[in-house]
Image 1 (cartoon, chains in turn yellow, green):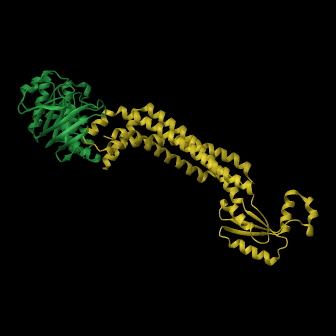
Image 2 (cartoon, rainbow over the protein chains, first blue to last red):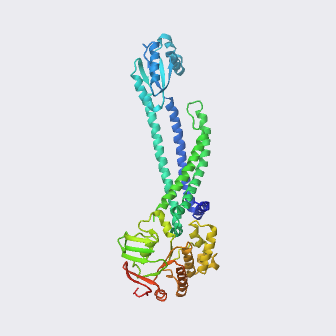
Length: 295
Length: 228
């Protein structure tokens, strides 16, 4: 493409938006609302995802060692655990420190279990390489000698994994549906601008313009509508998230949970929205061009 | 130059517009296409610039095999075939100059080339003084002249005119015919559909009479001798 032609296409794209002012306004508004919803959803799902990942990463397998195990046997068991492929880290927690933990949570009532009366076991805390395989690892460890019991939060952890994956999937489907709607709206707007310029397109085809020459200004028009439609929700989401982050972070301080920090999350989200806007704009307009350029 | 062999066209609605048509037109010829409305004249002409594809048979236009032409090559065919319509099809928001220049811009010609050629064709059609006017400030005949100027701006080898004088009075029609004949004299093949008996009878050229989708007569220097 010649540079002159490139500028001509850009100019035509802008001109067409102006010529169909109200339709362009309607399309930009529709895209803005859609992308506002999409952006909010991505924000929510990403944060839930982040929460879930925090929890998931916290899930470890607790291996209770049989009281009959000697130090040697314990060392042996530790070696076996470390040797497992999906095990990342193994830490030892003695029955005394386990009791201290319990006392830390429930208070001094447990003082009477001091010394030989301590009913607790020595424990290996096993971290796995990925949270999904925790159950599998737990099962494997359960079969080892001198393992009295294995606990990984079992059903609770499974439920959590299931819930986060559902949230991801449902969020993904809703986002997909919203984007589809936006493509449809842009495609309709461009179709109207194409109708209003049908004589022009007919003449271009008759004098031998290539299909791409005809298509470019419309693609640029669609992409521009998509871009402007993305800027508005981007600004809104920026302020919204900044406010929410400022407020909620206070409540969450001291817990293991945290909202995704605006830098870089907001930059990524806004860049993503712009890219989505431009893409759906161009795709929408490509859709409506198809029928006009088949002959 | 243009050759149709055993061409048949059946539209999707089942109507057969053209039956087993065989025609050969040489480069530089002037051919009138006459016949009753609905006889297949427009289909015949639209097949030449591949607006319509034949159902059977072969069509050769210059080096282009119309039936097997790839979609990406259609623009190249269209650059060899200029088309003029009864309703002009001008862009109302562009001036006379811009309307003609437009046809060259879409082929990515340089501004210098466009300037020179547009002036040349506007002079040919006698509108160099009205270059800055808008189509709705012109008479019907003048608008048709702009359309002709646009059709020949890219120097096509064939000019197809579908009733170019259909909406014009006899005097204006004469002017248009003078221009078309002048273009023909420069070597461009002319294929012109018309219902105007006076023009066909006065300005003798080859006449193809199409009736019921068939070539009913093909006469060198023929006349408009059939009932409309």
